[in-house]
Image 1 (cartoon, helix red, strand yellow):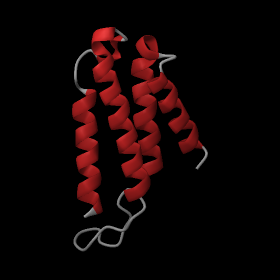
Image 2: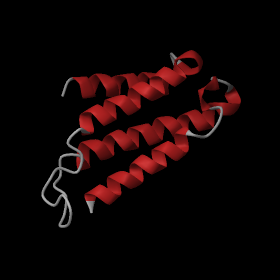
Image 3: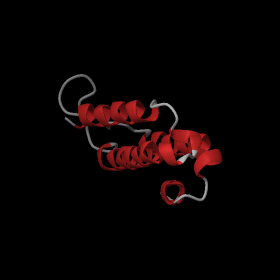
Length: 107
């Protein structure tokens, strides 16, 4: 069930993003920041692999799981970069997310 799988990735990403303090750029928040970077990368991977797949039987059967997956993936990365800019700009994780955004724009 690709739709349920994608929804689980979205929920996991939101839970990670809602942990307080990851944007601060402090040594204490570095672990939380890494979790956000990893979760965002996982979400983008899920959108790329599941977004264009067809829904299984039931309501919407045969339609794409997420026809706007590119928009959603770009929005997720842009949102994280915007919140993290002040604290994490120049960090490897920040650079990796910027690269993912460039890749998504090229599709």
